[in-house]
Length: 476
Ligand SMILES: Cc1cc2nc3c(=O)[nH]c(=O)nc-3n(C[C@H](O)[C@H](O)[C@H](O)COP(=O)(O)OP(=O)(O)OC[C@H]3O[C@@H](n4cnc5c(N)ncnc54)[C@H](O)[C@@H]3O)c2cc1C
Image (cartoon, rainbow, N blue to C red; front, top):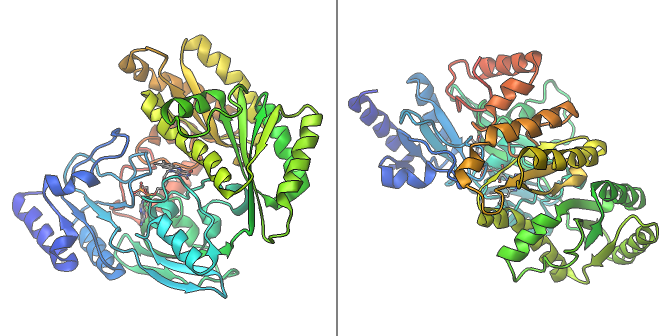
């Protein structure tokens, strides 16, 4: 692309989105071209900030005609390099942050329709204002956008009860790779009239189209929530507790998080004001939450009885039930601080894995000694959504170790962890997606038929490969 062509493209984008909707200088683009962890950077012809679906459609149609690749971008919290352009400077970033209107809220249908650039926290606030609840809950809620959540099929703390965002989405509006607008914002809870097309775009990480709006399912606010932290000897005991709770309270169990002693030790060290020292002598802890629709559900007493029974049966070592909402929030603050505490501790190698829950304990029991024998001193920081069969199986730099020497072992460590996960019937990507980061794992672990089907869909919806090329699918 020569300078005249580049200038013509910029002029067109300015005509469509206005001068403030196009960032073309390195200073103005900088914050859009780097991922928070600093692992990926990119260069762009332009960062385009459309203000409406019509503007997105005009930009996408122009880009396809001129062979310009488009990288949809939300709040840049995906951490897999999926929302960043390559280093060529020929791609455009399409960030939807100006499209953040709540288009409709229907309390009878219990739905909210929003533009894709709405931050998750804004969607939650809109639901709250109507006396309803949007149960998608991520620590990144203040930055991530609902379009990014849908494009990554985000999970979070409440998946156990409410599912991933896929389960919370009733319809989408999408700008296709050729610039046409596909709209299905009816919000029907039942519609068997052909293929359920929205499912293609959810979790596609922007490789099949740009999500511009969504209609989302809301639920009643839980009238009562009880949070508890429970000390257990090992992950197998945590899973027994999960079974006991599920049997006793069913769907009232809304979160079940596992935390290793080391993950709590990091929080205690880096966030001394948080109550991470409770139960710290236990090798593993569970943070769990029960929610009830009616204020007289007596959940707190019910939970205490169940935990007493588990204690008497020798299944758990100790438990703290939060006496009120603010105590519960402080327990959650500890859990939510783990990723930051690990970052402050120094470099780490992260794995976002899923396994059948029944195999989780065997996996952890096998991996911890294996890692220590192959990589002496490595410090596993294991925590996450055990109730969903999803763990952050992260590895921190050995104490006093050389950071670069540790990071140089990334491939070997990933191979060890992911080979075992896949052999046990699990997945190397549970909720953070593939982006650029895990394309190699896609090539290694996905079977040929699956990859062939994915490529067939990609060709059908984006024959000129303009939608987020170089993401998700491995090179043929
Ligand atoms: C502290 C922290 C905690 C987190 N906790 C969780 C968690 O518990 N569960 C979880 O699932 N994730 C979690 N994440 C990861 C991240 O927040 C999610 O993946 C989130 O859904 C990404 O949204 P985003 O708007 O930041 O998307 P981005 O990072 O901007 O983009 C992610 C991908 O989506 C595509 N995309 C973005 N917007 C659109 C659009 N409108 N149309 C089409 N494609 C689009 C991009 O091209 C890219 O491929 C966490 C991240 C952080 C930093």
